[in-house]
Each structure stands twice: as structure tokens, then as C-alpha cells.
Image 1 (spheres, rainbow, N blue to C red):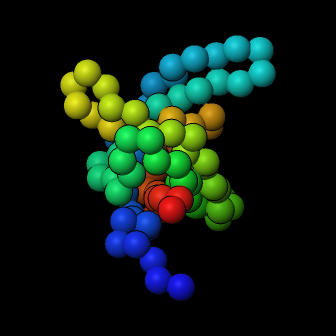
Image 2 (cartoon, rainbow, N blue to C red):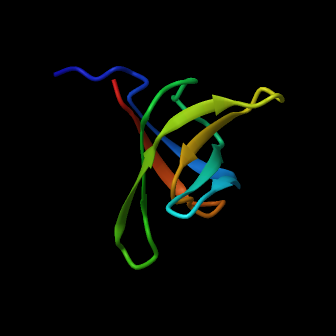
Length: 90
């Protein structure tokens, strides 16, 4: 199986912001220093915690704000400065 050149990439979380909260879930937006995601894409972000635990964060969607920045919508954010590997679903 061949992989698309935009399927996997390395990045760093640069910013997070909460966008909604209700009784059962919270939605966050995370900005990355680089991304292979495009508006409407889904996929996941993978990180390794200080404890060595591997973390997978589903990317529910990608949106473009009024300033032209891409934001990755997730239910559980990672801290700014976290190294991630992004995987775009095809």
C-alpha cells in the first residue's frame, strides 16, 4: 500500500483554545507550526507523554479562521510545545 505524501508529518503544537463545552464534551482547537491537514480533513495527532505513554488525539475536523490560520479541532488538547506526528485520514 502506498501512502500519500501528505498522510504523515511531524509538527509542534503552537497554540490551543477552547471553542465549546457542554455537559458531555469539550471542543478545542490546536494550531501547529506546520500541517499536512487541509480544511475538512480528519485524522489523528500522536504524542509521547513525559511518562512514555503514547497518546493518540483524534482530529475531528480542520477549520480556517478569519486570519487564515488552520485549526485542528479535538476533544482533548495537548500543551503548546508538544511534539506530535500528524496522520491525515485518506
